[in-house]
Image 1 (tube, helix red, strand yellow):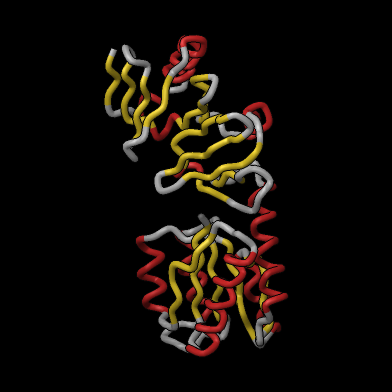
Image 2 (cartoon, one colour):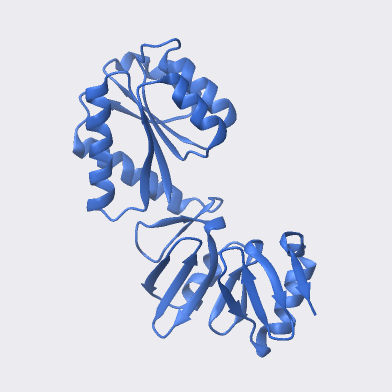
Length: 245
């Protein structure tokens, strides 16, 4: 789930931009949400100090105790990977903002067509980044943070991604997705691939793996030796609460 924030000192523009984003997410089945919509620089700073943010759309000509550029600089110091997008009626600011690792500029008034183009480029950029912290579900535009996935299950022609809050189903095969997953995703069963970083308990006698979300899956006899060897030698046991032999 990509987390967006929108900040503009004009409340009418702010509400319109927020509504446009929500409509784009819904219409295009994008796994994203607007977690903050604000006309206060103080509120934005407080939020980013204690919460993760993936995308920030910020008024570059922000009229507050600090400008949009100063605000972006403060946030960028703590969040190096966030996608920063400026909305502006003054494109001459573009060269000044370049040093802030700006992803895009949205000329005001922002149109739905221009906004959806930018959002699609963000999703494409994340999907093509081999070092991203997100995983693309099948061939869709759905992006899920790696740390939200507990395990992946094969069920006939379907592959089911089990996250902390919900499941995602796609028609695919383990052979297609296994090579695209980070090294902390390990095959433990003919029907399961687990995110070893989310395992909190392993019952060796019953070959059961448990997660903090109260879900569980199983270790298959064919995969047990290899799974335990990889799990132990890769130091994934650092994430484990208990290991019952």
